[in-house]
Amino acid sequence: MDIRAVMAALPHRFPMLLIDRVVSMVPGKSIHAVKAVSVNEPFFQGHFPTRPIMPGVLIVEAIAQAAGVLAVESLGLAGSGKLVYFMGIEGAKFRNPVEPGCLVDFHVEFTQVRGAICKFTGKAYVEGKLAAEAQCTAMISDPPRD
Image 1 (cartoon, one colour):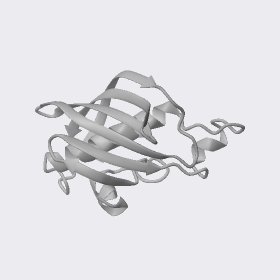
Image 2 (tube, rainbow, N blue to C red):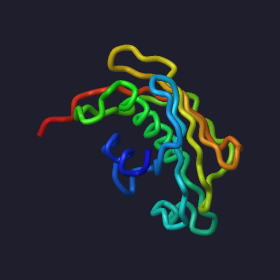
Image 3 (cartoon, rainbow, N blue to C red):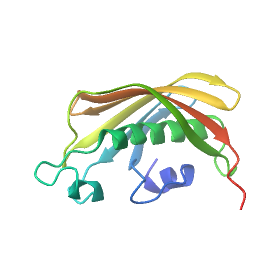
C-alpha cells in the first residue's frame, strides 16, 4: 500500500500520520509498515534540539496506526466510515533511539478480536534492531456525530 492507500484507511494527516507505506500484510494476521524519519519532522524542534530523538509516544502511535490499517483492511471496513480508536497500551518498552535518517519498520500482529475490540502486539525496528515494543487495544466505532 502506498501513502494514498494508507490515507484511505486512516483518518490521520500530517503531522500526525506516522506511517508512510505498507510493505506487506496478511489480513487477519499481521502487517509490516514503514516510516522514513526525516530531520524535518516537527517534533525534532523540541525533542531534543541538540540530539534529535523521535518521542517514544509517537513510536507507539505509529504502532497503533499500523494496527489500525491492519484492522480496517482485515475487517472489511475500508470506505465504511468506521474508525479504529486507540484504547489502551501495555508493556511499552523503548530499547534504542529513533533518530533522523532512520527507516523504521513496524511489525504488528493481531492477538485477539472480540466483536468491536481488537488487541495487537507491535514492534518497531531500525536496521534490524528492536527500538520499541508495545501491546495495544483498539475499538472499532462509528465516527462521532456533529
